[in-house]
Structure formats: C-alpha cells, structure tokens
Length: 77
Figure 1 (cartoon, one colour):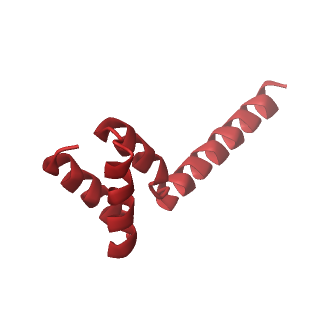
Figure 2 (tube, helix red, strand yellow; figure 1 turned 30 degrees about the vertical axis):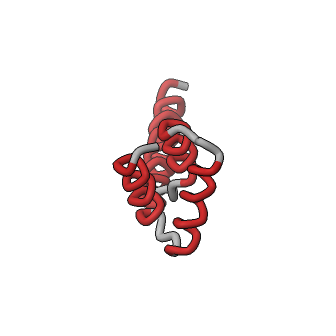
C-alpha cells in the first residue's frame, strides 16, 4: 500500500471512532501482511456501524405495508 492508501484506511478507521493505538496497530498489521488496499477497505466497510435511524424507517415501512395489505384483504373478503 502506498501512503495515500494508508491515509484512506486511517480515515475509515477514525470514522468508526476507533482509538489511535488500535488504528496504528491495525495499519502496521496490514503492511506487515502485505494486505492490498482493496481487501483492507472491504474488510473495514463490513465493520461500519449500522444506521439505527435507517433500521427504524424500514420497520415503520414494513408495518405500514402489512397494515395496508391487511386492510385490503379485509375489504376484499
């Protein structure tokens, strides 16, 4: 990995609110294992925190769809 890619990885790790010591150790491990940027980036993307607001919106949408479907079946029968 070149310095630009290391900085990109460092920025991704800091966005996850990880401490500097962990970030430095993880980057050292990536360099020691000759890990390519693409692989490291994909692994870090899987760590990203889920947006709880998005989860709530999905639950509300599913509930609304279920309620509308139930009302439609009640009217049809």
